[in-house]
Length: 153
Image (cartoon, rainbow, N blue to C red; front, side):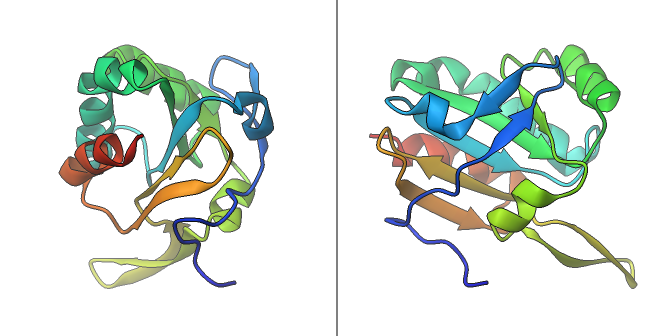
């Protein structure tokens, strides 16, 4: 599957949050959405990325946008992560990595010589019309939030 690019329609999805609510991208039309993917709760890079979005949250909201994080962790793991770092946005459950696959962020990863399947850290800024404004595959944890904020209209 070719990678997504700015101008493409964002793949629609329906997913459950860590609090049990259902989020559907189509239900967020009219708002901008920052959808970010991260490998694991409570790891250094993922914590840095999440906290950067937390710290930028007021500025993102001021641009009539919402933030949604996604990983393959469990609801309980997401809940603990959100509580520990006071994250003001939902974390979606993607246990079967369907959402990650739809956005092209699921694939072979490597860590210390070990290969495994997982999420590539990325973010997608989705316009109020459902089109992608910004696509960042393999973004650095400390660059994700500032780049997403800059891309918001």
